[in-house]
Image (cartoon, rainbow, N blue to C red):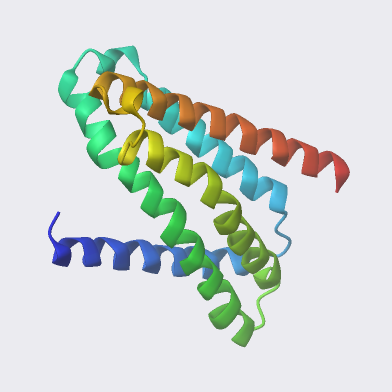
Amino acid sequence: MSNRAFRIFLSILFLFGVAAGYRLSALAKLETHKLLNVAGLSYNFLGVLVLSELLATSSRWKDACVRFLAPGVLWFNSVIPLGAFLGSLVIARLMHKPSSGTVAQFSLTFFFNSLIPLSILNEFVVLPTLPFAKADIETRWRLFGFFLVLTGTGVQLIAGLLAIIG
């Protein structure tokens, strides 16, 4: 991807995050565990799609997952929460939206808590440094699918615990 296209891609993601933060801030009573549940379901859906047997027979699909979708997941999880934080904190606070504090806290917490899993994704799939991960696209593709399903399930378990506790 060229530098210009990459900047446009990041700008679109950031603006999407700002819009999401603004829209979520307008909800009357937003609960964090519901946002986490949606994030977990999104990870699980993407993991099932990546590992789908209908698509997995194609080596082009595996290559596209490793080369484009995995870096996309990195950037989605980095830029959208920052945009949502800005959208909820700055824009929604100026307009006194009811859930702006919840969205700001959630998006910033989600961003910082995503750094460790995303660094693992980067090291094993996107830019592998370990010899067994460098081996072939098939291994990196399986690790990517495993990462998505494991992360989605973990996020949903955390959401369930927060729903029980809070």
